[in-house]
Structures are given as structure tokens and as C-alpha cells.
Amino acid sequence: MQWETVIGLEVHVQLNTQTKIFSGSSTQVGAEANSQASLIDLGMPGTLPVLNREAVNKAILFGLAINADINRHSAFERKNYFYPDLPKGYQTTQLEHPIVGAGIVEIELADGRKKNVRIHHAHLEEDAGKSLHEDFHGMSGIDLNRAGTPLIEIVSEPDLSTSEEAVAFARKLHSIVTSIGICDGEMSQGSLRFDVNVSVRLKGEEKLGTRTETKNLNSFKFMERAIALEVERQIDVLEDGGTITQETRLFDADTNTARAMRSKEDANDYRYFPCPDLLPVNVSEAEIEALRDALPELPDTRKARFIEQYSLSSYDADMLAGDLNMANYFEAVVTQANDAKLAANWVTGELAARLNASDLNIQNSPVSATDLGQIIVRLKDDTISSKIAKQVLEACWNGEGSPDQVIEAKGLKQMSDSGELEKIVDQLIADNATQAQAYRDADENKRKKMFGFFVGQAMKATQGKANPQQINALLEKKLTQ
Ligand code: ADP
Ligand code: MG
Image (cartoon, rainbow, N blue to C red):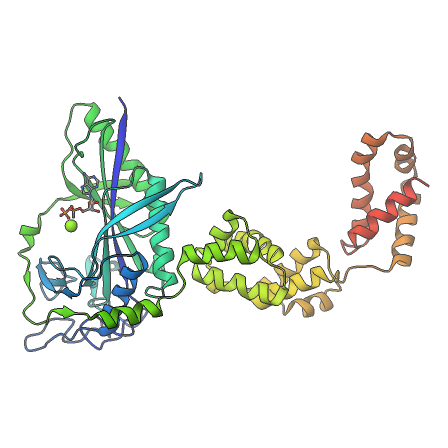
């Protein structure tokens, strides 16, 4: 049978405000457990929440970034449920009147195809605390530092049809919220968390199938795996004549399995009611226009600019413009090296590979943009060859100093003294007389293949420091003499 997948995402984005959404407690991560939870965050009797203006502004910035309607009037409600990490017994959130209305996010797929994903709305709410299941034997700990951290929850329409599309959409949201500076984008810290709603239906069927929701995925890789797993499971169930239960599921990345957590609850189950402690939020036209003027460069605009300004390929521009920190790094390398093509090659090639292998992001690159730029400068002025440049990068990566210090200390300067190189070439031809003779006797084709041997010998003799162009020219001349 021919099945078709339907996916909709709910995305929690932690806003990077200094303080919480309704209190003055710090939102800084890494503090001692429960040192940043105030009486307001705990919902103690007699306390009153005060809405953080910055959280509202950041939510509006997001709305503007996706061309959404900004609701002039929004309001908070209480979503009631019991859980140990929610000491108030309710989450303050928005339901009927979210701050951001319908909008559009354009995604681009690997084959260049573009697709618009509709955003149903985005609302403001507070995060809960954290249950710590591993720190205490036989008990769970509760850390309430996160309680009250501002979030926007972005709800997409069920417009995605493959895991590739879902991941492209998730990446695009990551790119947007980091580019406009409302979220630090640290997925491993939970700054962005994805709930994936998945259903399947027979091709041609109009009615949507029953969906499940897999919660709290905090990496693109996990998301892709969780979707694949769930699609397969649903198809199996349906092909065996079963039915899908609408439920919430939990994905376990360690075992690559998922299990049902609870059957899906309705809004009714939460006894939502308007929050009596908070005034409705009214934003004026002038406030919205001021934020629109302050909106930083969006990823799509930056990508177009990179293609235009630096003559990058669409692929390179995607890789470099999608992430703000990556983009800033790249532009700093270009400034230093004055060569966009080489800067793009080194950042997306050698550097990206190293960062990947060490599971580091660009902000934590051991090699600064200035240093990488300087390596490229030395490459361009022929102080070093590109092979040696990789060696210099490695040394800088290991903290052995600036590129010039490394080149000096390790004696990596390229040998361009033609007299000296000529001596070396003469010597190696004498040492390899048989091969040299064979070369002379060979035809054009064979010669091409044999030439590499002599280049290799020359590089070996100079520890890779010979200027490659000079060596090639010398060898060509001397071998045919
Ligand atoms: P609820 O009101 O139960 O929370 P919503 O209509 O708000 O449900 O949808 C929640 C999320 O689930 C949205 O992202 C939406 O796109 C997605 N969704 C809804 N129905 C389906 C479906 N049949 N298949 C896949 N995703 C769906
Ligand atoms: Mg909903």
C-alpha cells in the first residue's frame, strides 16, 4: 500500500532575556540548583507576576521575522496540571489570544526545492523546572532554576511530508531565532526543543490520519530518527489491521526506541482559565514599527547577500549564512584574508571538519577568525603551501601560538630559493636514475602518472616545504633534459 506521512511541529524556544518572564530571577544556566527560583517563580501566595517587556519584544521580533500577524491584544491563561517540576500547579501560557498569529516559514530542501510551511501561531509562556533522575539514588531531584524562563511555542500547520522537510524546517527556525538574537540556539542545553506530531494516511486520502506526538527532541538527528521510527510503527499497525491511538510518546536516543507516555489530553483536561494576575498585553503600532526597524538581518537576506557580495555558491552560502555565529566568523576571516573564496573553502572545509569531529560549534573554535585569516594570508603570499597551511591550522588548533609564531617556530616557511631547490631536484634525479630514465623513455600518458613520484620525493626531501609550482617547473625541465 502507498502511505503518505503528515507532520506538524510544536517548537519551544527559550528566549535569551536576562531575567525570567514574570520575575527578576536570573535565567543564567549553570547556577547551583534552586538558587535562581524566586517566590514568584514558585507561585507563593501573595506574590504577583510582572511581565518582562523584553520577552514580549522578542516574541514580536519572531513574528515580524516570519511575516506573521502581530496581535495588538494578547492575554495569558493558566494551564493547570500537576507535576513536581511545576510547583505552582499551573503553567502561565497563552491559548485563546497568542501574541503572534499566522505566518510563513520558507524551507529549502537538498534538491533545491522550496516549500512554504504555515505557522498557525506562536505564543508566550513560561518554562517549567527540571526533574533530575540520575543524580540521587532511588530519588528524583528537582531544580527550579529553569521555572519561569520565557519561551515562545511555535505551532506549525501539518504541512510537512517527510523527515527531511521536518528537519529543514527545524533548522530554519533555529537559524531565524539565532539570527534575530532572541535565542542562544544551544540545542544540547534545551534552548530549542521540538515536539513532532506524526500521522500517516493512504495516498490520495484527504482526511488526516490519527497522530501521535513525540515530545522534547533536542537534536536534528534525533528528530529524523524519531520520525522514521514512528512512521514505520504506524504503517505496521495499520497494515496489520490495527488503529493508531492518539498519544504522547517519548523517544530514547540511546536505544533508538520510543514508547507511549500517556494518551493525548484535550485542552479541556487542563482547565484553562484567564490568568487573573496579569493584565492583557496591548502593543501599539508604534512599538511594532520600532521593533521592525530593529529587526536584524534575516538568514534568507544574508544568504542572498553572501552569494552577491562574495560570489559564493548557493551551497556554501547556505552553510555560512544559516548560522549567525558562523556567518560572523566567516566575514571576520574574509576581512583578515581579503579572499572570500579561500575563506569559504577553509571555513566550510578544514575548519568545519575539525569542529564536527570535536563536536564543537564555531563559537568555541580553538582557532580564531583572525588566525584562520592570517593562515590564508600566508598561503596567498606564498610563505606556506596549502599542505603546510593545514599543519599550521592544526598547531593553532592545539594552542601552539599565532600562525606566524607557528611558521617561525617550526620552520615551516616554504622554500622558494630556486638555487637551493635546483640542487635538491638534481640530487633526487641522480638518486633515482632508473626512474628518471624510465620517465624519459615513456610516452606522454605514462609520464603524467610517473611525475607524481618525483614530486613526492621532492616534498619528502624538503619536509613538504618546497614551493609546489617551482618544484613542478624544475622537475619538468630537469627530467626531460
Ligand atoms: P491540539 O489542539 O490537540 O494541540 P493542534 O491542532 O493544535 O492540536 O495541533 C498540534 C500540532 O499537531 C500542530 O503542529 C499540528 O500541525 C499537528 N497536527 C495536527 N493534526 C495532525 C495530523 N493529523 N498529523 C500530523 N500532525 C498533526
Ligand atoms: Mg495545540
